[in-house]
Structure formats: C-alpha cells, structure tokens
Image (cartoon, rainbow, N blue to C red):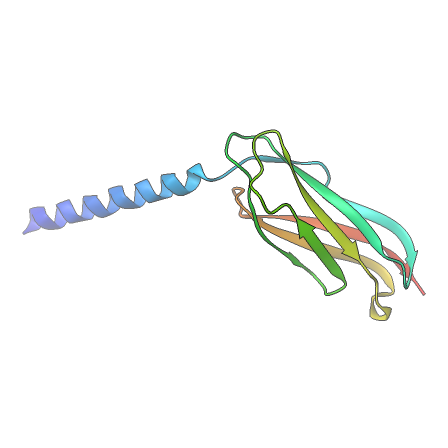
Length: 130
C-alpha cells in the first residue's frame, strides 16, 4: 500500500514538472522600442495617435492575446498574428481627451501576451488644456 502511495506521489510530481516545462516553452523574449510616449500639450478636441512596436528577439513566436486600456478615451488595435523571430508587433493607439481629463494625464495600455511576466504596459502621457 505504501509503495502504491509513493508511486502515485512521484507520478504527480513528474506530471506537474512536465506541464510546467511545456508552458515555459511558449514564453518568448521581446525588445520594447519605447514604453512611454509623451504627446506634450494638447487641447480638448485633439486626437493623439501613436504606434508602439515590440520586437520578438527569440525563436518562439510572440503572440498578443488581448489589450486593455485605463480609460474609454484610449482605443487600440494590434497585430493579431503570431510574430516570428526578429519581426515586429504593432500596437496602434488613439487618445481622445474628455473634459474630465484636463491637466496632466498618464494613460496605460496593458498587453496580455506570452512574455515571462504575462503582460507589458505602455503609457501615453501629456497635458490637456481647455
């Protein structure tokens, strides 16, 4: 009976290690061209468009799963296909300020992807004048 429990215990450990290594094989390494874009001073009614780029510097394809933004005034579009080694993923952003956002702002764009920490965060910063 004890041998059966020990055998079962080692089987569980080996299975969990195998699953973990398979998951880690899908982790890629990237290079951020820039992490923050300062658009300076703008007025209400202006629209800021900016493109962030991410370079895949590993052999494992880079994949963006989804993107979230810190407010409804920021929208994004992104490369939906896997990005191979030495190629770039593109994240296009648009920021349209609203009256409640007058003053200094720092908006975030969070990318859910297959990097080690699971996400990347980009920022749009600047100042909105009335």
